[in-house]
Image 1: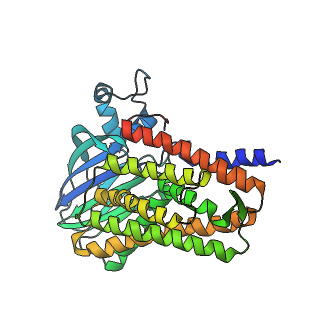
Image 2: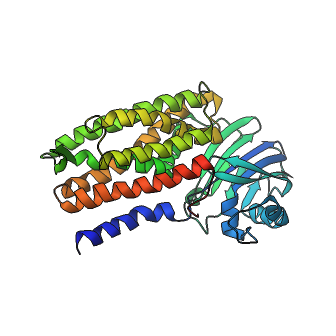
Image 3: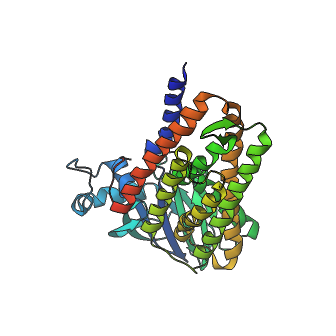
Amino acid sequence: MNWRRLLICCWLLLCGPVLAHKASDSYLKIDVQGAQVSGQWDIALRDIDFALGLDADGNGEITWGELRERHDAVAAWALSALTLERGGACPLQVTQHQVDEHTDGSYAVMRFAGTCPADTGDLALDYRLLFDLDGLHRGLLRLDLDGLTQSTVIAPDSRRQVFSGESVSHLTQFVRFLVQGVWHIWIGFDHILFLLSLLLPVVLVRVNGGWRGVNRLGESVREVLWVVTSFTVAHSITLSLAALGFISLPSRLVESAIALSVVLAAFNNIVPLFNRRRWLVAFGFGLIHGFGFASVLAELGLPQDTLVLSLVAFNLGVEAGQLTIVVALLPVIFWLRHTAFYRRGVLVGGSLLIMLLALVWLAERVLDLKLISA
């Protein structure tokens, strides 16, 4: 297999998760006071279309009319994937349909209500939405149970959860938000590609206008530490400021700036602009990525009584997620560093691919278009 075929394989591996059906979230807010249940469920229109087929005329756009025609079907489909129990099953009914915008597109908003058989005791929740179609789907839950607010992310392996009206321990809250931080970085393809663009050159040095492999692994490790530490410090600053409510930026501006950061980081591998100052690039754009990380916390809602603890846990989760990527990637690229395949195919070819993909994201986010189908 020559280097061109290897390059094609790498491109397919890189494109696979990005061009596949997008990892999705739904936002579920439930308020249980005694036996009375009320709530709101935001589900992406693209996910409903994926499951039920909303686009009746096949023009690639879902109108309010098309959604309205399927309100009953959407409500039945959603409620069939959610079970609440308190002293027995709590029958739920959708009371209102709306549409809202999130950072990644339009969402159907369903308000619902119900009554449980008991007004005290634990609340059991079973969430099954889209798990049979999309294993990457997650439900972001904010539950107010008799005045106590709890937040969690529901995955296929944690679809059934039991909540107590008693206060959640600090350790439990810490672990929940730690896991959420890890998951957020792993499904954040723009964050991953930005990090990847910064990591690809760390096993090379620029000499006489060309690239050559470093002599020792220690040189690459040192560069990685500078890059990752700068990115970590930067996004921790803005993540904290945004989550604590000191700074707020429009989500469309933040998401567009994140896409631009990926473009510039990848371009720098082709036409070096910051050859020995990649840590500055990581820090500067890390400030923007911090606002992106903060968006998921805004959707979840940080519990006020453990605000700082949850914020620290989420941040540590993000770091653990990206360190996992670094540990998996660095030995491989160090081993390949002296090959033309790596210098031309992976570094240049991969950076071109990343840059083109990020340019599409940038156009989508700036112009509010949909150029890559889910």
